[in-house]
Amino acid sequence: MSARGPTGRVHYGIARVDLRLPGADGLKAKRALLNRARAALVDELGVSVAEVGAQDVWQRAVLGIGVTASTATGVDRVLDRITAVLERDPRLEVLGVDDLADTLDAGDGGPLTPP
Image 1 (cartoon, rainbow, N blue to C red):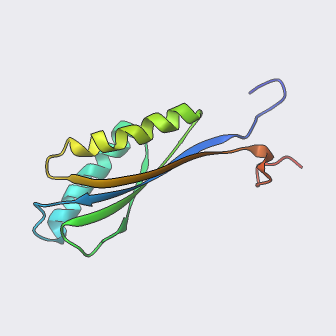
Image 2 (image 1 turned 90 degrees about the vertical axis):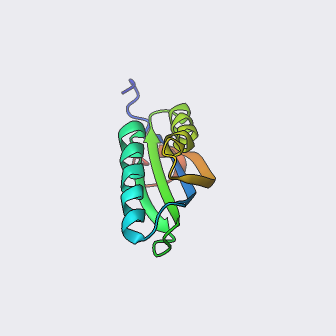
Image 3 (image 1 turned 120 degrees about the vertical axis):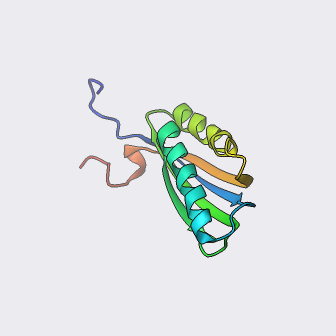
């Protein structure tokens, strides 16, 4: 905390990851693969992960991933590592990643603005 008080600045990033799971022969196999992928992302990068699309398709998945950090550089580093963590599992194929990073400042008029 600075002498002027907290800044209230939040650095955040989100990613949408399209995956192909060529070896999944059913929804149970798909869930097992995604659970391992989710655990690796959470353990290694400290992100939040949700399956946001293609839930009923055996060999496809869309993940939504969120991260916050104390610096914009920290967010960028995490977003840059998502693909590498997922591609360590040869049963997953990353088809595409769209990401966005931004900063919410206390002066942006949101709920963090002091009265």
